[in-house]
Structure formats: structure tokens, C-alpha cells
Amino acid sequence: MSERVLVSQLKGLPDGPVSVSGWVETVRDQKKVQFVILRDETGAVQLVNPATRPAEDGSEQDAAALALTDVISNLATGTFLTVRGELKHDERVKLGGVEIKIGSLDIAAAALPETPIAADSGLDKRMDWRFLDLRQRRNNLIFRVQTTLEHAFRSYWIERDYIEVHSPKLMASASESNAELFSLDYFEDKTAYLAQSPQFFKQMAQVAGFGKIFEIAPAFRADPSFTSRHATEFTSVDAEISWIDSHEDVATMQEELLQAGFQAVKDKHGAEIEELFGLEVQVPSIPFPRIPLAEARQIVKGRGYDIPRTDGDLDPEGERQISAYVEETYGHQFVFITDYHPEIRAFYHMRDEETGLTKSYDLLFKGVEITTGAQREHRVDVLIEQAKEKGLGAEHLDFYFDFFRYGAPPHGGFGMGLARVLMLLLGQDSIREVTYLFRGPTRLAP
Image (cartoon, rainbow, N blue to C red; front, side, top):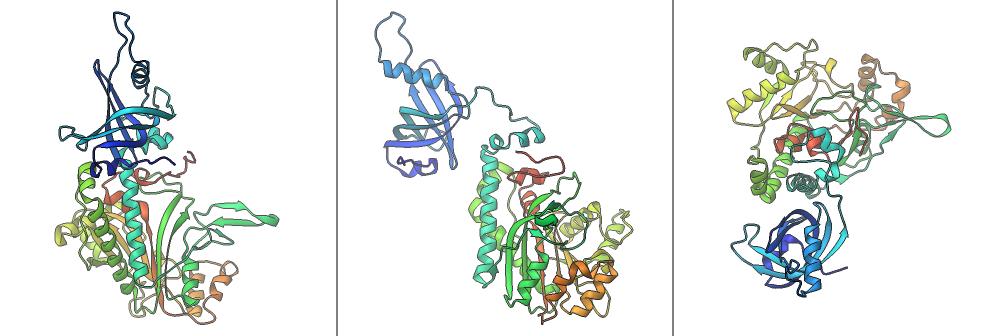
């Protein structure tokens, strides 16, 4: 491997020989000098070449210099190449205060002269050519932010002795209901399903005595929605903990987790996010506000919006309204909506003996739901009854009920959509912008 230097390292090097590799972003071919902006995964640098043109009087000139000038004149945007030359520090150079005088140029792979997308291309067109779209500095930053955020989450958990698990994504039955399931042929005429969530297996880890676990992994929903916040395949951030008193223990853990994650992003990328996305990363204070669902509906109604849903839940506009109220009242971008009726919650959510409401919450961030969390029902007889109330047959859930027949601790956890968090954190309009390769009802490529 050649002694390649990353663009981000150039400013710390002395003047002298250097080798950089990347792709051509722009070429300015002037009469007496040529400029190339070369970008790699860490930044961009200006390359310069004193142009050598054929002599008008026919006199001999340096053939190598003429050839280099000709090669640069014909470079297409996107061409990947390696340049060796002389690094020079010059404060007059706007791009990082350094430039490289080209000595030699080695093309790794030339690009076609016309690119299929432009700066003003629509989202669908950009998704068709996602590998080109991702070359932008702004899009590169999205996935650096994602990396930092996930690392901060893992660090929070690992420092507190959580165990990371990798649950299977092929299942013999549904994890919550038979709705929104992708099915596929399995061996010996069997049918398998893609996991909607790791819910059952997170709970299995609790009865296995793991105590505290987390997982960051794919989940699948056969949801025909075409909204800006839905996908058929997404990354789910999950955690489950034992020996809790209520869902409040889960909420406390999650708000600490998010605070740690946002602080890490702000510390590492805050200035660049402000430059490229025009917003300041706000690290949330804790505790986050908590509002019972019934109270939230009244607040929304008082703001002049009648929620059309008949099941007692909030709709997307209701979520935006209650979040606006929290922002105005508490100056906070997050709010836990708590105390949901069992009819609109999963069968495994524990119910409060006094109120009959579930010990659960939804977490809203900037008006969008990013999480459902709850204390789980760990008493097998109660769990079976609650499943029957939902019309779920025991024949499909016996393996799950078995988890609880041999002892189980009080436990709870949450599932959070990573792309939704990134979308809202970076002020984007769609999770497609912050998903490496989006999957939806009409998109399976690239």
C-alpha cells in the first residue's frame, strides 16, 4: 500500500513531498494554470499545475509536462486518482490553507463525463444514484454523526455493564401481531417471518439472567406507508433491563442515553453540523417532561386541534401540537407521553392495578414519535390472559410463554428508530436522507 496521506492530515505536515488519493470534485482549466479540487473521505484539497500548452512557434517543449496538462484538462468529475506532489502551506488558499503542486497523477478509475444527478436533482433521482449522492460532504457527515451517536450509546451501556446481543431476524411466528409481517419460504415447506422487533428475544435475555442488554440491528415492517418517517427495513435501537419498579426506570435510562449520545455528537461534529446543516445541536437536559396521554389530548384540544382518531391515541398532528406546547412551556425538544390504554398497546405491556392503564410511554422528539417503551408483564398467567384479550392464539405464542414458566424478574425496555433520531437531530425532512440505502414499498435498489 502506498504512503497515502488523508486530506485532514495535510495541515499538520511540513512542506514537502506528499501523496493523496481521492476523487475529482472540480477542475478549473485556465490558460496558465490548472486547479483541481480533490476530495477524499476526510475533506478536500486544492491541487495546482502550471499549465504547459503546445508552443505556437512549433518549438520543442517538455513532453511529460504537456501530457500532464492534457490529462488534467480531460479529467471528469468523479474520477478516482492518486496525486504525488509538493505540499505547500499558503494562507491565501481558502481551502484549508494548503495546496499541492502536482508532480505526477495516476488515475485509478476514470468517470464518465456526464453525471446522472446534479445539485438540484429530486430525492427519488438521488436515491437511484445513491452512491454518487453520498459523495457530498454533507451526506458524508450524516454517517459520521451516526457512527458517533451509536458509539456513544454503546459506551453508555458498556460502562454500565450491559450485554450486547444479536437476536435472530428469521422467526417462526410474529413478535407482536400478524400484521405488517414479511413472510418467506423456509426449509421443508415451512414459512419464516422477518422480525418486526427483537422484543421476545430481549425478554428471553431477562429470564436468562442477563440483567441488562442492548441491540442495534435491522427490523422489518411490511408497512405500505409512504410517509417521510416510515421504512420497510430500518435500524432499531433496543434495550431491556431487569429489576425495575416501573416504566419510569426505563424512561430514566433512555433519557440519560440520549443525553450522552447528543453530547458526543455536539462535541465531535457540532461546528460542522452548524456549517452544513445550519442548526445547533441541542443537548437535552434531564429529566425530560412527562405528560399522561389523557392530559396531552386535552392540551392539544385546548390549542384548537381535535384529534380525529377514535382509539384515544395521538395522531401525527397531535404529536406535533403537544411537542410545540412542551417547547413553549418547558423549552424542551423531548416529551414522554405516558399511561396508554391497553387497547392501543401490545399485550405484553404491564397494566397498573389501580388505573388499568399500561405502564408504558411513547417518546416524542421535535413532534415525532421515536420510541415506545414499557414495563413488561412477567407473570405468565396474566400474560396469557392479556394475549387472549387481543385475540392472539396461544399456539403461536407458547414458545414465548415458556420463557415465563420457569421464573422471570420484573423488567422493561424500549425500541427506538435510529433513522428518525438522525432525521430530527439534523433537521431533515425524510429518513431517506439519513438512511444509507433506503427500503420502502417501491424501493429495493440500489
